Every structure is written in C-alpha cells, then in structure tokens.
Image (cartoon, rainbow, N blue to C red; front, side, top):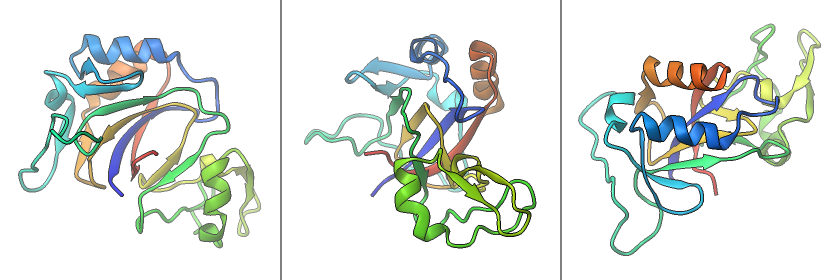
Amino acid sequence: MSSSLYLFPLPVLNEPPAISVITTLLQDCGFMGGKLNARRYLTGPEFFRYITFVGCAPQMQLEMPAEGGWDFCHIRLHEDRQPPPLQVAKLRGRPRCPACRSNVSGWKEQLPVWREDASRPWQCENCEIVLPAAELDWRQYGFAARCSVEIHQVYPGEAVPVDGLMQLLKVGTGRDWRYAWADAAE
C-alpha cells in the first residue's frame, strides 16, 4: 500500500468547507493542475512551491504511468465523508490523549471500528476525558476528518506543506488546517 500526505480543516468533525472553494483555491494558486477524474488532479505548475521535500532528492513521478493506475504523485480531494474515517500510517501511528498526553491503550483493537467511524466516543483511562476518536493525537501519523486534500505517493515524513499553503487554505476557507501522513485512501 502506498502512503499520502493529507491536509484537512479543523475542527475535524464540523461541517467542512465546500469542496468547490478548496478546488478553486488550489487551482488558482497553481498547486493543482489538470483534472484526471471527478476528484483527482495532476500536480500544478506551482506544486513544489507549496510542498517541501526533506532528506535526499526524492524521485517523484508526476505523470500517470503508461499502463494506467494511480501509483504516481497526484492530488485527490475527499468531499464531506460521514462518518469520518480514521486513516493512519502503517506501523507509525500511536495515538495519545490530547488532554493528558498518555498513550491510548487498546487502540490497535479499535482501528477497524475507527476506520469506519472516527466520530465514536473514546474515554481516556488516565484522565477520563471522553471525546471522539477523531480528536486523538496521532502525532501527524494519522487523522480523521470529514474532508481532506490527499497528495498521493508521499511517504511519512518525506514532505510537508509550506506555511504559505496552510495560510492560503485558512484565509480562503476561514478554518485552520493541519497535515498528517497516512496510508493512501482506497
């Protein structure tokens, strides 16, 4: 399975910004290019202005392979998903309570349920706070949100959005945005 970098608005369970607004923002700034299908886009001419790659020079395939398929760097928009699914980076996500910072016990057993509906309540064994699983702290290796921008073929920790992209989304939607790495959506 491939992995992706995701951008998503806060609060994660609130009504998300209109996907048309997000699409316009990302196309107008050159982050997204031509449309591949209803929700998939090529990277735009300004893509590398808004994403910083760390480490050695990564090899990025920015065009669809001749044999087809989605195994190349492109952008996919996920519209309002109800209930919001949890997505984590395989072998990396280890959640903790956002209130007391204690590790979440039994989280692996809960993954199948949370992948279907991250709005389900969870209670911390340490501080006893009750909150939706979507609000757990996955340390940027997992997230749950009603809508997101997925950048395919980005491995965990390999790339981050620049502040300018996050600010553009914030100003354009009136919402704070965060990012995380997780397995590619199906």
